Image (cartoon, rainbow, N blue to C red; front, side, top):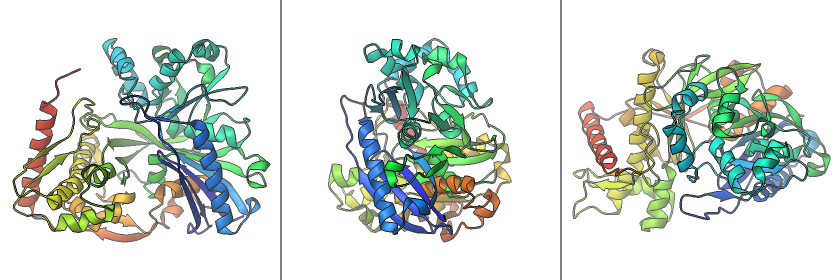
Length: 500
C-alpha cells in the first residue's frame, strides 16, 4: 500500500488528493459547497454539506487514480481551522450550522471577556488573543442561543469539534471523538504549555469539558473509516490545521524556517522549535505540530485579505476577468504614481488586530486607472507580509542568525510579479516549491509517517524541491521610500477608527 489519501477541507471547497509513495500526485478532486451569510459579519456552513462534499471528492480521487481503498495506506486530514461544529452524540445531527472562522458574531462576548480582565491569563495559556476568530466563544454562543443546548451539553449529550474532529467522527461511524494538538491550540480552551484542555479556561468561556475531544499527536492512529464509505476500511493517521499542514508540507522543520500561504487571506508561520515565544507584536503563539508527544511551536501572523483583494478587482470593480491578468496589468502601471491600497475590508489582522477599521486607497490622481489599482492590490499583500516578517524578526531573538528565506504557497504565488515584488520589499529570497499543494501534502505526510510510507522529518525535508527562487533586486532607497509610504497609509487607516 503505497498511496496516501489527503482530505483538504477548506472554507469554500472540499478537496481530496491521492499521493504516491514518492509524494507525486496521482489524482485530485474538488467540490465547492454553499456559504451562508445570515446576518452582517456572520458566516456559516451546513455541516452536512462539508461531510457529503468530502466523501464525494474522496471517492472521485480514488477512482481517478485507478486504485481501490485497499491500495491506500492511510488518510490524512487538514482543515479550515477554528470553524466550530456542535452535534448530538446519539444522532450525529448538528444542533446549529457550523460557525466559520471568519464569523464575527461573538465580538460582544470577546469584549466582555476583555472587560472582565481575562485576556492576560487566556493569552498566557493559549498563545492567542481574545478574538471572535477562535473557536471557544463560538461554542459558547451556540450553547447560549440554541434552546436547551447548554443543559444538554452539561449532561454530556452534545459534542464539540473543529472540522477535522467532525470529519473523523463521521468517517469512523461515530467511534472516535478526537482532534490533534494543532487544531486544539486554536480554540482558546487548550493550554499549549501543558498540552491539555484547561479547566480554568473552560470555566471562563463557558464550555463543559464533556463536549471536548481527546487530543492526540498530529501523526497518530486516530481510527479507521467504515467499510461502506470507500469499499474497505482505511486507517486515519494524520491530522493538522491547514496552516500547520502547509508548514509541514513546506518541510519547515528547523527553527527559523518560515512559510507564507496566500489564499483568501495570508498566513505566515515561523518555526521557533520547542520554545513557545511570547509575542510583543500581537502575533499568535501556536503549536506547529506535535510528534511523539513533543510539541514544536510557531509564531503566526494572519492577514485577512490577500487573494480576496484580487477577487475585489474582478468581482467588485470589474477591471479584470481572471486573476492571472493582475500581474501583467500591474506591470503596465505608471511608475510615477504611488498608489497604496490598505485592504482592511474586514478590519486588520496581525500585527494590528483592529476589527473596526475599513479599507482605503491613498495617492489617487486623475491618471489612476486599472493598472495602478492592480499594482496597489498585489503590492498590498507584499506590504502586509513585510509587517508580519518584521514583527516575527523582532519577537524571536534567534531570527537574526537564522537563514532568512521565505517559502511560499497558495494561489497567489502563481503570479511571478507578486513574488518578485515580495522578495524586493522583504529584501530576502522567496522560494516557490515544485509541489504547490503543500497543505494537502502536509496532511498526507503526517498520515504516511504513521503508516510507514514516508520517512522521518529530516529525510522527508530532502524531498522538498525548489521550482523558482525570487531574489531581491530593488534599490534600498526605493524599498525604504515605498515602505515609508505604506506605513503612512496604515497609520491613516488606523486613525480612522472611531471606536465601538
